[in-house]
Amino acid sequence: MNNMYKRNDRNLIRDTILIFIAIVFFAGGPIWLANWLIKDSIQQYSPVKMVRNIQLHDGIYAIKILASYGFDMNLIRQNKATVPEVYFASLPRELTRITNVRIKKELFFSSLLPPILKVNDIIRQDRRKLKKIILDITVGANVSEPDYFWLTQKLVKYKVKVRDVQDFISRPGDILDQLLIRMNIIPPELALAQAAQESGWGTSRFAQQGNALYGQWTWGSGCGMVPAQREEGKTHRMKCFKSIIEAVDSYMLNLNTHRAYAALRQERRAFRDDQVIDVLPLVQTLTHYSEEGEEYVEKIKNIIRVNKLNDFNTARLKTSIRIP
Image (tube, rainbow, N blue to C red; front, side, top):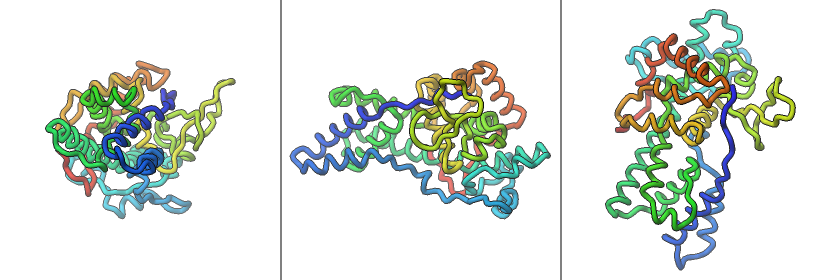
């Protein structure tokens, strides 16, 4: 369950790009406006925080809630039904008590599939916007100040390295291409399989108490749970989250930014946005996700195969908009 998650210093990227934007758009303007942009950029806006989550208190059963929303996993698997937007704040406690394996797995997948699809939808929308900005820059069309500011935020979020202002000016194509490579979806079947493996099908202490679904480590401030068998001298904690969807968002950002998963991003690059991504070449690159290496890769492949998770590679939310 080791994860290569590490903190990177974002200050250089943020300051460099924002200074460039200030020079381009605010030269001769009020100094306080440029300073406001730099200060405001520190707080990253995330649409997942706007999602309404259902709190599962004692006596509230997730299975009944899913049924009330018309959640039919069989029809979803057959691509005959869309996925209702049901977002649980935490994993159902029933997962620790249900003895029927089939029902337990169905409840686990039903709890994870909506937030996985939602985060992917957000990424698709961002990717479409980025492509439009790249096209505008390429043809010499005007790019608005809000779009440039949005672009700055995404460069920071996706940890695209920019040495200095001149670096950005001299190779905007390379920089934006790197952002486009990183800003992409994670196949639902992969996100489901890794969550199952890392969380013990949603029954681990970390998953139940802290929404730690993907075994991510943290060394900084914020929510973190100390592993019971952490080696002496180690300081890492298991990263926890306020909601399932925030855990999913962090997991996808990790795969999209960390250097350990550069090969995954290159494999994914071979697929167009209108194509279904073949997940197996991506799985093969995950030898660094766990200390188990190749054994971990085989476990993920097996979960995908046994549970027929490829059934979900075209699943979509009821409110999803098809984005070419």
